[in-house]
Length: 513
Ligand code: XMP
Image 1 (cartoon, rainbow, N blue to C red):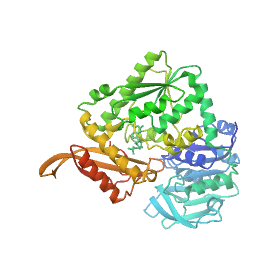
Image 2: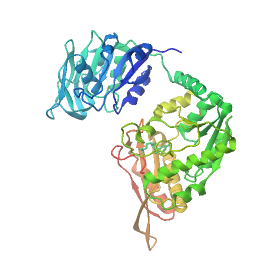
Image 3: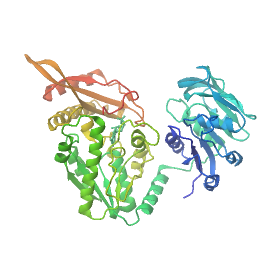
Image 4: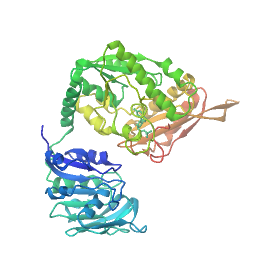
């Protein structure tokens, strides 16, 4: 299999995998390489173009990451993004300085004006919103470059040396907030680099299968299967790659939604795979007793999962690999590299230090949620499985605020079921990406019949998102919220108040813990 390749040279920015994902979305194969990769190694990939990512440094700082000057002599088109743009300017004789005032330092959504005769912006409106995040400023652009975009605050938002195919943008075209960002990347790939668009998710599937076969050889693999989209797609991929060596273990930790354990078992028992259900409710609930701090809950659940997998592996005998359906946002939020820990996803930051497997295999680690769904379709998974809303590994434990008890879980399960049922009945399921109930740890006074109550407050949460990295709260019609509220208070003992969460991510996260 040979594809045209674009190299994404990583200078340490936050959004590097998002750039890769956008390039894939445009039908072009790409590889993210550290900026220190030797030129010979980059040349061996025979790239059709190079993208310099953003990064936290300042190009004029002597210790900041630099590009090998040879890269500018390869005759390849280059697109520099944010730091990458400044690096392009700095390396080719321009001058970059710290912005002295707010006039040149820009953060957030910015109205931007484009020269649409520049290949990067051709076919796009002359004015639109971009997402800026830069404190440095290109005071002087290098010889041979022209300015091709500006904002009210900054005259040098984009530069181009079209003869050499060098382009730089101060903003981030890869984030959703840049209105025509993907179209700009597409222009770079197709109009500047001459891409043919020869890469598809079908190719990804073939490559991933080859990679898994090579990695696993004739070893045995245990896959942690939750029945959610990610682990189901990982199961299908592994089944195609090394089916006979695979056992899928579903841990029922007692933190599943109503009827979910039985549904998962019913669905996967029909597959042509070895499927094991490990009932571990007591084990998880006794370890969770008295634990209230969210990170402590997550770590404890992550560890307990592994211990159950180890026990199952001992029954199978000599299992070399533990496979997980980890996806890229799990890795990022658990604090990859220098990024801050937002929450330890049970399968990444929640893993114990010592694990009784030779290696952990994560074939979806660089994919985003919607790419995983696409891959699932490519693997022939049924639509109901592929389009399921995500459910976190730690389950209802992170939706049951404060101490997790069986009684609270049962209340939450029932209320969550009512919410999901009403959403389905209103025909709204397809309009939201994740929706669930949270049992807050707050109790308040109410009146039911003629008596006083002092009971729990339920919160409802629903979000609309494409990548789960950012999300907007869903505008659910009041009538639907009303029905859920009336039913929850009437049908679930000890719930006497219902709230709707109207916070987006950021600043909130999707789950409450
Ligand atoms: P947050 O709450 O970080 O959630 O905005 C983003 C997405 O990730 C899911 N999530 C998890 N999934 N293990 C998982 O498998 C976890 O530990 C975990 N924590 C959050 C969450 O449901 C949402 O879709």
